[in-house]
Image (cartoon, rainbow, N blue to C red):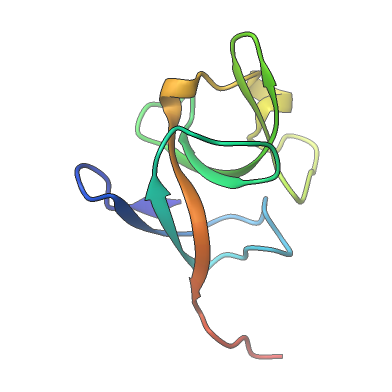
Length: 108
């Protein structure tokens, strides 16, 4: 995932891995709203708790005492999600994905 963070309320980020297939695929661009108000079922951008500077795109599964459980849609062994690193603290949630904006059409 690569993004242009900092002060704008909207973030445009690129998907680089397969963990959210089929909803999001490598090469897709997403538009996200910077907020920490999330709920289960939403797709979010969050900073990896063990790799500073690494932005994740994951689906919010549920709330726990120490943060949010984030899951991959394409759960494969070793996927970088809460099954591997546990709940993500709320302060590491960066934004809620609003839409996939690129590519508009996929080649078949």
